[in-house]
Amino acid sequence: METRLRSFIKATTWRITGTLDTFIISLFLTGKPTLAMSIAVTEIITKISLYWLHERAWNRVQWGINREHLKSDSNSNFK
Image (cartoon, rainbow, N blue to C red):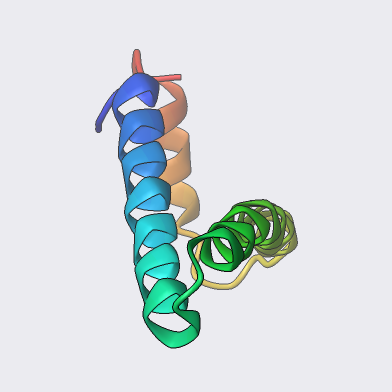
């Protein structure tokens, strides 16, 4: 298992990569850096919010959870 800090850094760098991609595509399609930046900033807010809602919804779904694995994880040092 990886540390929480590593997971956070990976998530942050992935979000930066995605936002940079959105900015480049928006700039290519519009030709306007200010508009492309507005789209990229909006995308950051909406994607983080949608991801959070998605995660919260999946926390309620019991399908595919290995109960035995969860029990062994609760005894480990990773929390």
